[in-house]
Figure 1: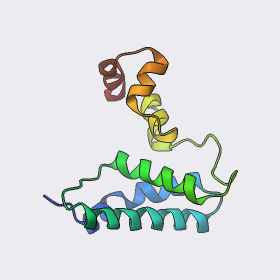
Figure 2: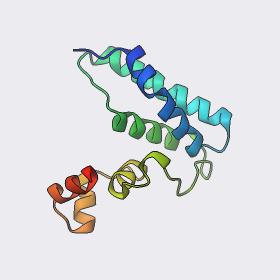
Figure 3: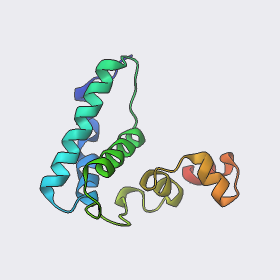
Length: 120
C-alpha cells in the first residue's frame, strides 16, 4: 500500500528537522535542507507509487542533500546524530553514507554480526 506524504511528514518531521539543525551552520540553511528533503520525498512518492520510506532512508536522503547543497566547510564536521550516538554502527552507516557490506569489510565482521550489533 502506498504511504502518503502527510503520513511521512507527520511521522518524521521532528527527527528530521532536529538532524537538519545538527548538520547546518544556521537555522535558515537547516530549514532549506529540511524542505528540499521533503520535496524530494514528494517527488519520489509520485514517481514510485509502491515506494516505502523508513526513517533511515529519510535520514540518508537528508544527509545526501546537505552534502550537495552546502558549500565546502558549511556542513558541520564530524557531526553526531544524537538519536543514534549509542549505536555506533548505525551512526557510521548514516553519517558516512557507508553501506553495511563496506562496514563489514572494513571491520572484518560478518553481515549477521553487524546486524546483531545494530539490534543490540
